Image (cartoon, rainbow, N blue to C red; front, side, top):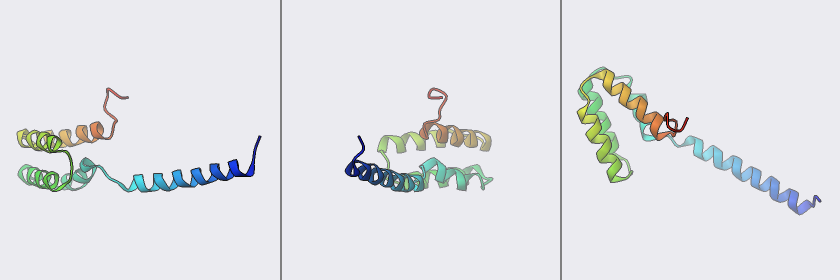
Length: 100
């Protein structure tokens, strides 16, 4: 049976969920933020410096920071750097091959 109180709760919940989705969609991942800047650059050292500085300035887990910094420092070409950023973006957005 449908009661007015029940209908109000559904509408109120729907509005809350819609507002929550709007807030969540504004949050960008670190790799999404990095990729918008890095893909404009041509110099590998500049890309590495930007990425390391950017990651160090963010509030993320220390183990994730260390892993990202170590991985970025190991890269030896612009192509490898682009591949790393793309793969990391997919991984941290939950779209890696193991989840597809």
